[in-house]
Length: 251
Length: 170
Image 1 (cartoon, rainbow over the protein chains, first blue to last red):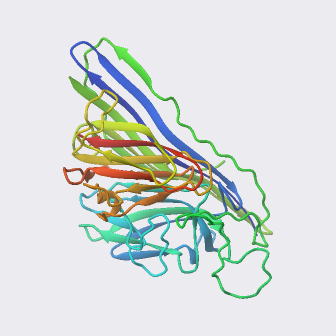
Image 2 (image 1 turned 90 degrees about the horizontal axis):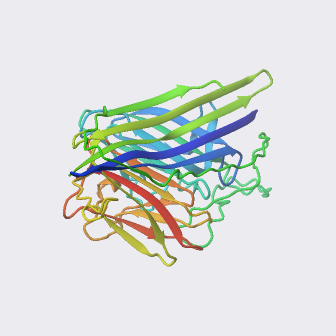
């Protein structure tokens, strides 16, 4: 079964920040943005696994990224390197928080949070985006799980989860051993004890074709266009809104 | 003298995922994103101060502490944050292993709420990576004893530039 995957991960803060005194108004308009493009394959800025699902979280929901989940096509997700994680807490009720992290679960995936009890708090309507396109976060059989934990007030919280990664079998592609041990990481996580780097250049999958080119664009557009006007008006009327979309596209 | 702020924090993924067998090709092409449009003010979905800068971290676990009370915005006014609504960091390194740590990490007066109130907590952000945390309704409270985020070099090869923006309520 052939597979292809392309993806873009985007984080962005776009703002206009003004200040007015008795003489004039000054405003800075700025876009701080990063768009990371992934092409199909294994290695830096490449991905061949994507998983997405909406969970209703009432207690602990453990996400094991290797060997247990199935993708949209019903195939088991065997993530060996995690490249990006996106979570959206869909509650709109104040105090409806979730924790995300290893949170002392079994076989904790430590790297994004490092400590076994590490976590992020994602509030109602909030999001967490972690993208690590070059090195990724290495997965091993004893480090393949993170936890979403309910910390809310309303009884349950819907959480959208997506992650992007590279598949693998924890065994070097050159290995002919039939050992089922998954303890051999293919990561090149040399040097620093904190290095999460893992890059596999050879496909271990016998099915998948694909060799691809990588493209990465990082834009930090426009450092500041400042404008000045003599108006003293200072009122900004904008409707605070939050939009969430999961839309299908036909391209 | 008054400030105005309009801001949109958005993040997400867009993808096209295909599998084929002998008979045909199935395609899953979607966008999942969350965009929060903040209006000027102090309540849910509102903010009135933003700080953005680039940090230069030298080799050797160098540290920069961001005090969200005293940082000066582009108009040289102290942030004076009482709440943080969104945090965006981008590690601009391109060398493998050039990570940064972002979080309280045991600093004085740590803003630990985004990291689950773990005073030593942090996220490891790899080269080219993004960390975007958005909390539009409740925000994370900033107080005299909870006001600092630490950014630390944790790489192996080069100095690292980190772009960041913090959106808050004054």
